[in-house]
Picture 1: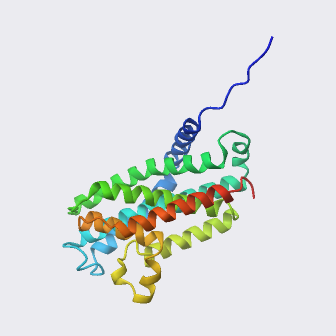
Picture 2: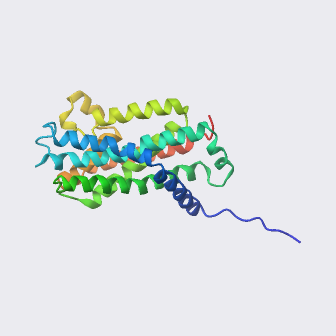
Picture 3: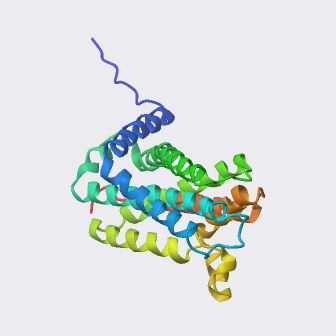
Amino acid sequence: MTTTASLPAPALTRILRHAGYETRIIVTNAEQLLVSLILPLLALGALTTTSVLDGIADTRINAATPGVLALALVSVGFTGQAIQTGFDRQYGVLRALATTPLGKSGLILGKITAVAIVALLHVAVLSTVAVFLGWQPKATFGWAVLIGVLGVITFTALGLLIAGTVRAQATLAITNIGLVLIAAIGGVLMPLTRLHDALAGFVQLLPSAALGEGMRDALAHGHINIQATIVLAGWALILVAAAIRNFRWEN
């Protein structure tokens, strides 16, 4: 009598199954979900009650909302996933996955897919609040979706690259400080035209500025920003490849 070993599921099936698993973990962590919404909501309140974005669009809420949505994508993908994965790695939670057919690529792509699903919830909540405050997007919605997806891929991959290469405590510090810098001077909330020329010349090459400028052009002005899309797509490819190549299952 002979037995036949079961074959592993196709790669796409493995990725989608892991994405479902990761999604359940994220949505059941109510504390982390709230934390990833607090900073964007605070930013929305601050930007609509001050004159810092006056002249960017016809109203303050129209000027602020695209950047706030971009910040939410960064928050849930970059900070949230990096911290969770960093501590999972430190405590050996990922050790079992290392022995499965999922592999590093399946882990990374599954987590990115899960973040994209959860990001939809964040966008829905923030958009509802913004509409209540008078937001009227001059929308190229299809392009905004493309920019948003590229942003999720880019910043989730960056977070996983950090989480997979340094210790959890360092990941916590790096990503929290990084999120503050991205929000303050990374071109997400503040258009490049509001930054010092020397700083703007550097920041415009970063994925944060590409995400912020792309979302503003699509939702505040109804324009398609090809340059921002190319920059963001390039960063997405580089960071996904780097995360898959360098991710380590254990410290």
